Figure 1 (cartoon, helix red, strand yellow):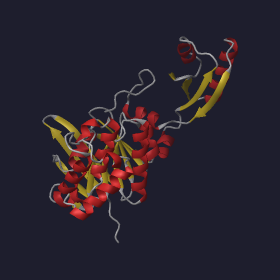
Figure 2: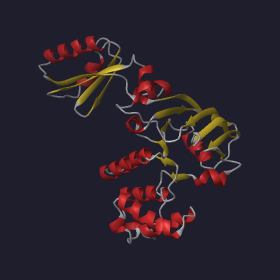
Figure 3: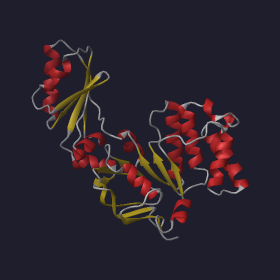
Figure 4: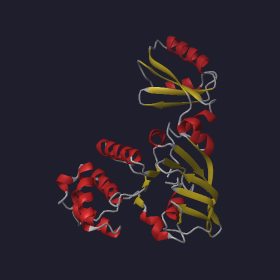
Length: 321
């Protein structure tokens, strides 16, 4: 069987009046690949997904899904995809079973197959025992799992996941990640947008960073990290913490930035070995004991910040949609 790209985007431009939402972007996603799409607010992520799923038309350029042009051959292109939007698109007054069957009917799944898939997916997502309960009584995590199950009822070759684990409980988060891993193992292509940069780091084969309608970089997470190898850090914890330590540590020689996360401090520097010596000297001066200390290379978050020009606020990146 001839190999075909799952998604091919060529010179895509989208304008809303004077605003250019997408500025001549080009990329492809290989069959069976998990592809992450990251960008700050207004970067063009949502616009791209709307075009790829046939909801919106580009101003110019083309996009194909398994060789089918999304504008000229929309029905054929959409038959091979499953779409899981950021907001759970379930009907509260229907049962879990009824939501699944309704979704299967929309995808024109035959009666025998849709009942089989509904049983199978509700079991996988831990919802089979609640299949006859109306969805209005479900938690956010259960609704999210049901939404994902509905997006898989037609056995898609390509799955669009928009913020799949945002704000979910640990159990739902783990179930969704395990299911996505299993799907990828079966050759399903996944196009993933996420707030969680670490999620992209763990789940994605490649990541595209989009900013102001332009793609700033596309590569495997580890290769992206190597492009800014100069951004290194040391992470450590003391046996006692106080409010003024962060500012004092930030003023140590050769420290470019400092942040605190939980009981740990993280100092960014191009000279980690010298900063380690300075931290140890600081600890001795203040009668502190260093509980742990680790040297770290750049993270995907560091890459994201470098390429988009965003600033950390209180140790976190906030300007991500």
